[in-house]
Amino acid sequence: QDLDRGLEKTKATFFGRLSKAILGKSTVDDEVLDNLEEILVTSDVGVETTLRIIDRIQKRVSSDKYLGTSELNRILREEISALLDETSTGKLIVGFDFPKRETPYVIMVVGVNGVGKTTTIGKLAYQFREAGKSVVLGAADTFRAAAVSQLEIWAERVGVPCITQGMGADPASVAYDTLKSAISRQADVVIIDTAGRLHNKVNLMNELSKIRKVMQKLLPEAPHEVLLVLDASTGQNAIEQARQFTAATEVNALALTKLDGTAKGGVVIGISDQFKIPVKYIGIGEKMTDLQPFIKEEFVDSLFS
Ligand code: GDP
Image (tube, rainbow, N blue to C red; front, side, top):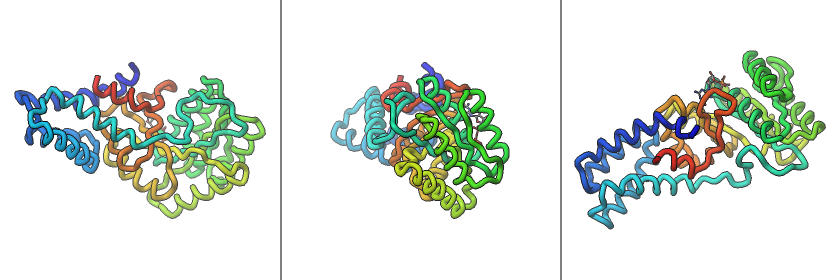
């Protein structure tokens, strides 16, 4: 139900327009396909992904000339599901509960300011804690004073420790301290906040790779997860950010925030298709509980319900 609420605007816009596009049409003809193409592009699915979907539907139309518009929802749903299948969470932990581990599971969180990075970290910490896991946060976004204090506020709210060295400290040193502290506390999860200064790409690359390297001195497989946070309501901007961050560091998971306030939910489909990186979490509100693991079936069900 939360997911349905979160996707409300996307559903209303997308399907409202879809039903208009096929009004009075009984079969899927070129005009219907053109309309569908436009709707997908303007729902922020992205041009490449839209063309792929249209192409696949066209193939089905040419093998069945009398394909009814009443079938369009089902077909579209199948094609979107198939696209999302190609991205998989692989070795990543899915959900908030997982078996006890010997060493902490390390999540390094990247993304530009304002996308909801701190909020997502707070929500993650809360939900892991609710699932009985011990969490340690690391304030390695030392570039902005506000970033450190915001994270500390979340840590206090959730009731988890937050390791800081204040503003201007070496981010890698903060990450090292955080992981060291987590290992000695036998914590289950470590979440490291990082600065997202995209305008200086070389700095960003160096900083992130240094954070990785120092953590690997303590735990060779860290970070297990590099989670890129993107604001879904920025549509194509989010795609551009994904392009830049994936060029700067190895990203293996995505969190898409602010789906609740936007009709651009289609961006979830475009981003996972274009970057072949699994969407792991979606943010559907400002509360601690408003973060959900992304489950393909649930997402598609909700979109088409
Ligand atoms: P940061 O600069 O990336 O760390 O961004 P913040 O975590 O401070 O979030 C920026 C704003 O977005 C805050 O007002 C958050 O409450 C809001 N926000 C974050 N995630 C969501 C979400 O999933 N839905 C909504 N509606 N707002 C969100």
